Image 1 (cartoon, rainbow, N blue to C red):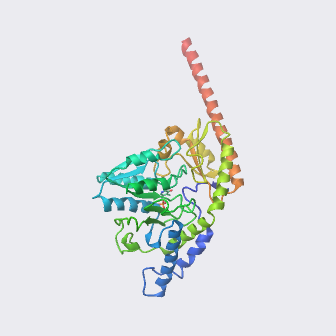
Image 2: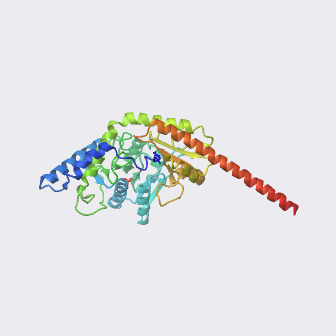
Image 3: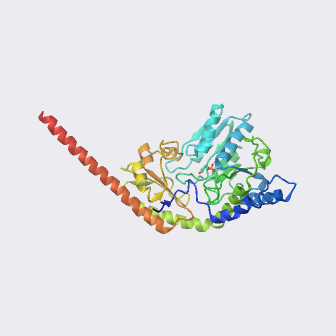
Amino acid sequence: MSRPIYLDCHATTPMDTRVLDAMIPYFTERFGNPSSLTHAYGWEAEAGVKTARQTIADAINATPTEIIFTSGATEANNLAIKGVAEAYFSQGKHLIAVQTEHRAVLDPCKYLQTLGFEVTYLPVSQDGLVDLEQLEQAIRPDTILVSVMAANNEIGVLQPLAEIGAICHKHEVLFHTDAAQAIAKIPLDVEEMNIDLMSLTAHKVYGPKGIGALYVRRRNPRVRLAAQMHGGGQEKGFRSGTIYTPQIVGFAKAVELGLTEIESESVRQLQLREKLWSILSKIEGIQLNGHPTKRLPGNLNVSVERVDGSALLLGLQPIVALSSGSACSSTSTAPSHVLTALGHSSQLAYASLRFGIGRFNTEAEIEKIGSEAIAIICALRQAKNNHTQIVSQESALFQANSDSV
Ligand SMILES: *Cc1c(COP(=O)(O)O)cnc(C)c1O
């Protein structure tokens, strides 16, 4: 039996073989420790890391010294939020985040609350966007950090980074953005957007898992940060641990490829998404979640009325690999906090599907998924109607019997 079509690119992406090719020499012959500056093995590895750091910095209009490699966006978010809180607590103990942030932002914030910090979790409008006026009003004299994600991992919504950055800059509050879903998919510019800290990861952009970075502004203003990992003092002391050369080289290759193809891929994925939506929107009681245009080109998230969410996912499982409106963390079955923040009932949040279209998906796949989804939804509704009819017939019969007693 063939495996289902992969359409879960917001969870992770397949690694591009061109990325693997770039990484392989750094596992084998160029295996040296980039911190070993006394011999050629170390120099070779160090050269690979240096080039990669430049590539990542260029991708967001930063300088190489502003890039700290981490194990991914989770660690980068933790370093940014807890690191700023620890470095700035004498100036204030208030932070602002958005309700639809990834758990890797929300949970460090919750942790800080246990230490005495205060956090405002901004609501979003029905289309998933933050209200800029509300954001500005939430800033207090003791606010030290605003954290707003670039692109949402469930509904793909793109927040207005430049406008948020301008507000933060005006009030002299640091601005952090989780750009895990955005890097090399939409243009990012830390100068133009007044971004002070930015979390990145490789595995959402066809790179390897286990590598990411935190951008930390060094000028206007110079951001202070408390390290969260102590040890050998790598990454300017912000993140100790032997530098993972092959992953870093792969990360840079993935970003480089993503940027080379950013325009053509955006257009292609947008066409696929519109194709899928043109098929699915024929279903009665289906709705699009999130802003219709201010979203990642490859993201489609829908809720379906009068269908059991788990039955729908189960029916689709042999055909397509995707995720539903229950929280994507495997340990939780709660309805998605993102969809409930849009004002959805938990039932409608459960009966939702997140399609993450990526680099390797084709039009034929999209057409197949569209028609199979329609068939399954119709079958489920039919079964439900039959069941309801049987139940009502039975209760009528019961009613008739009990009446006659
Ligand atoms: C995937 C993701 C993360 C976590 O990134 P890891 O590199 O897997 O730790 C954080 N934030 C967002 C928005 C994500 O999509």
